[in-house]
Every structure is written in C-alpha cells, then in structure tokens.
Image (cartoon, rainbow, N blue to C red; front, side, top):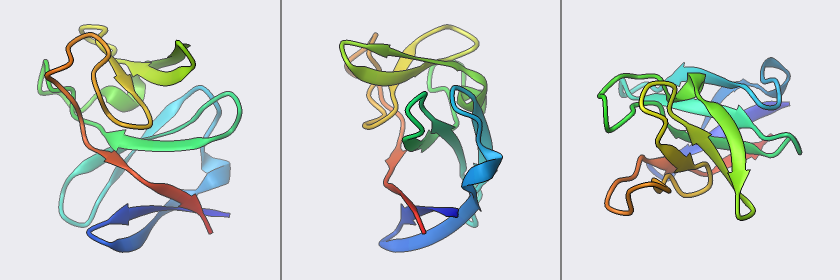
Length: 107
C-alpha cells in the first residue's frame, strides 16, 4: 500500500506504508525540493508535516520523538524539543509558530 500526499491539489506517491515503523519518522524529498517528515502513530495512522524545524532551521523533525498531549499526536524536535501537532503542524509550545502539514492517504 502506497502513502500519498496532497500537494498543490494533486496526490503524490511518497513511499510504501510498509517502510514506516509506528513511533518513528522518515524524511522524503518532494519534487519541488521541500522535505517532509512522515510518521505512523502507535495506532498506525499516517501523518506528514514539513521536516524543517523553524526554531533551528535544520531538516530534523523526522528524527524527533512522537507522543500525545491532550489526545493530540505530536513530534518533539530532536534539537530544541518544541512539539509540533502532527495533524495541523501547529507548535504546541509557541502558538505563533507552525510547520506545513499535508493530507495523507493510503492508496
């Protein structure tokens, strides 16, 4: 089963779902040069957000730790530990900061 992202109103295949391990992220390069961080939560729900940590500028969010806060799945940046909601990309520690989020489907 292939995971696809909705990018610019088109579905883009990014990887096979079997390549993801629940609780761990992987990075993928989009055709326009952006990086995305792909995750499966412990319930096997897929998520995709931008891979760039807006606080450090490094492409590292795919290497962060995932968890939940008040029922919301998040990834904590491995550098400065800010948490980003995996569904919306909103920073849970600074409401003025966010990363792009992408709609994901299995096809």
